[in-house]
Image 1 (spheres, one colour):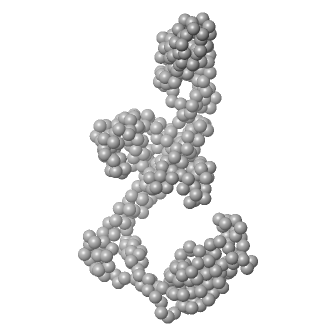
Image 2 (tube, one colour):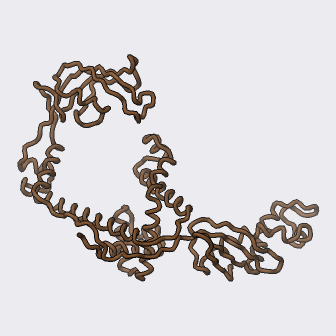
Image 3 (cartoon, rainbow, N blue to C red):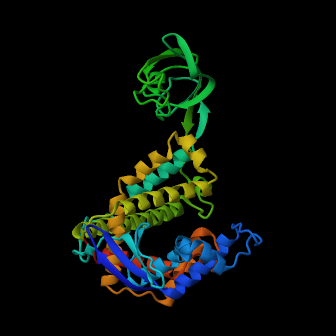
Amino acid sequence: MASKAKWTKKKDQDGELIFEIDQDTISKGLDAAFKKVRKTLNVPGFRKGKVPRAMFNQMYGETALYQDALNEVLPQAYTNALEEADVKPVAQPEISVESMEENKPWSIKATVAVAPEVTLGDYKGLKVNKQDTEVNSDDVDAEIDRLQKQQAELVLKETGKSENGDTVVIDYKGTVDGEAFDGGSADNYSLELGSGSFIPGFEDQLVDHETGDEVDVKVTFPEDYQAEDLAGREAHFQTTIHEIKTKELPTLDDDFAKDVDEDVETLAELKTKLENKLRDQKQQAAEDAVETQAVQQAVENAEYEKIPQAMIEQDIQSQVDQYLGNMQRQGINPQMYYQITGTTEDDLKKQFSADAENRIKTNLLLEAIVKAEDIKVEDDERAEEVKELAADYGMEEQAVRDALTADMLDHDIAIKKVVDLISDSAVQE
């Protein structure tokens, strides 16, 4: 359809793609355009939609169909021209007509933004920080302590004063300048002291009190408090402590171990299992840290042409769509998300805009290394990737294959191989 495509690089990442649309394609486009136009014509002596082509040409001229015909054939012609010139656009083109002469091929110009070129620097044998993967008894004890606190029960504190870590059951009534405000009061509210769940300073003033005490809590709302009418203002909360509850930790014995993990019989078994789990976690964290550092170094070692704004905007939108898609899978639609978080789509875009350029540079780098290293993807690697994706998303393997094109699958596998190449060759110092 398109032929004689010629690509000329211009300033920055813009270029011009000039291509022709041949006579045979033009003829088919004119036929399609006429079929659509004929349905709307009212010509005396002919039923609507039955005007002969010759009559139309005599009355209006065939050139009246040119724009509609171009609209019919341009998308495929443009795609063919991109393939012929081996041009990969990163945004929609600006199309202009060079010539549309009768009985001659049409000449079209597309101004196209393409991905910037990358000049690779060092990406093998990069030096990264030494990662600690050792697990000692203190690590295991800390995990046991966390599990013990997780299993703790709240029991009523019959005597004694409240401490951080205790839970107090309180009534409170808040006022600002003597006036009550929305959300400023509650009855029989359970508050863990030291949890930081209330306004800064509130919980501290309930420490070292006994059951039955009445406390006038004075606090100042933060300047960035979500209720603007309260931000920065001083409030008084008349507070009554009804109960004080303290955490009672379970005894560290075999019964505790079985309560925590039904697959173990003794505390010693639990500690061994936790040690292995912590070691695996540290190993994975170390591998992730090495990968992150090494890839970022490779990104910084490379040189890039200017990144088109269109690429940055597409990356940000892609991140937003992916994030909201994850929320949707948890039953939270975009409107609900924005309401819950008190944000807007623009806020979410700003959140992802900070790292957009680095994400793009990283992708460009990895794709450049795929090409430089002539990375190939084997059949068994494709099968393994499909298997892993099916497991991750709870899908049938055939459904994964149907959802992904061969090029998409090969691209993702090749990128992973390059990341492994960079991180596996990195040297920890």
